[in-house]
Image (cartoon, rainbow, N blue to C red; front, side, top):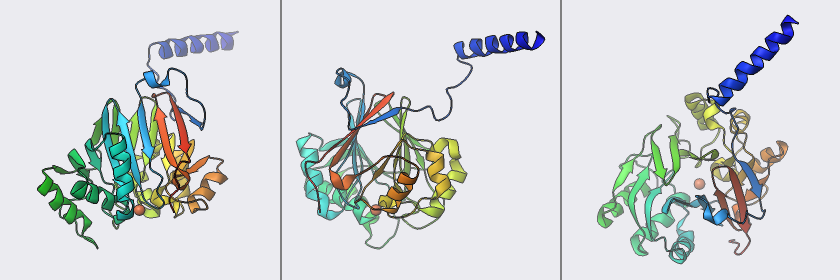
Length: 297
Ligand SMILES: [Fe+2]
């Protein structure tokens, strides 16, 4: 009898705590991901975060829209410059709030450089986790910084833990403290309501461990994971377990190492080689649809 009363009392206390908001939602209780499914009829009327992953192969280019603001996250190589321009011009996005470059390698920065130089792309600011004088083969960072000066676009180095805002979307920078250019790519944890997506640049093994040690496993949990380094390297298995995505994105062709890991964990996966991919969330659900309208070789 006593045990029964204790159980009833515990249940009542728990109910009151939940009602009073004293207990946070369970960790990992994110947004649900619907892949290639019809969106609700009133979807367009909702406040949305829309991310378009352009159909490039071993190139990263994402266009983010939220609350009437636009941001570019990487842009692809010089070969993709015209494609990026076509997308931005067609969507009236030649001026954006910010451009974030995960790292200054050709397949992430060159198309941005060419569009700013020759095709009228402007931004309120250009953001990089790397310093303005960062030296590397090809000297993309310093070339970009001098172009930005010429065009009057402010350059800003963003530090780990700092945040960006795009409409109601909040992005936090994670970054490995040591390693080469790929390893020290800026990683953005992007959150809108309950929804989250982890954009990982070109990090791999050691950098994944360093970030995990720095921010903790819980801070890596995301509904969607862009596979690091175009999916061509194996992820540290503890890193994939920490993120535990419902969906993986590979910015490359099929048959990558990441695909195998996603499949082993029964996580669906999409490849940007198969078409433009549009990821939309209202903060509660994700609708992810791929348009096979153009396939780049
Ligand atoms: Fe890359």
